[in-house]
Image (cartoon, rainbow, N blue to C red; front, side, top):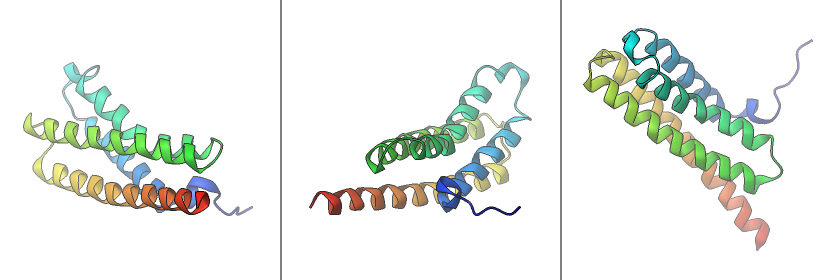
Length: 128
């Protein structure tokens, strides 16, 4: 049985955010053990918050709430970007891996912002 994707699974932004979260989880496996409850946990939570807030927004009632959760995703993405930078400064991430993850966060950011703007435009047209 091959079902069509529904809701958030149709979104490129969700797929890329999901990929980003997975890659962050894999990258943090090599962080020092003393960071398990510190930087590792914080970075993982921030990265995972990006796709999960898209999912949660889709589970709510209406575009206004979806837009609110996409906005939260944007904040979580900013936190992820900073924590990746901080991890790189501590030499927990090799420069090539940091560059790849940073490029992916930039892509997710562009996609998220476009999605947020499209939801805002729909809200404006519906209220006009």
